[in-house]
Image (cartoon, rainbow, N blue to C red):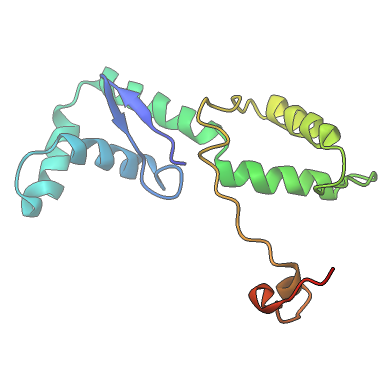
Length: 152
């Protein structure tokens, strides 16, 4: 999920995995979204755009860019949460047969600590779960279940 930053009613998606690599890249993204000329002239027009931009607009862009760096990305949240769990002295067991309440409580605690918003209305329909093949994980060949005969 990419972060978007709204400026003057237009949403911008910064370059890179979650944010632009630099403030200059961020400004280039904003300029590119507004630019209507030829691609060959774009670098020079970017410099002109910067020179003629109102200093208050540049300050606003800088603040919005800085704000975007402070927010945690989805991948940072996943790795951070798992890293936090692995540093705990207590075991956290997760499976289809175990009570998930403790895990839900830990997720909520991590979300609160990192100012991560709650799930959206489209959850869980927007989540794709990878196929879990226990045979493959154990280095075994998966049986062909279609060829099995069930005896009573």
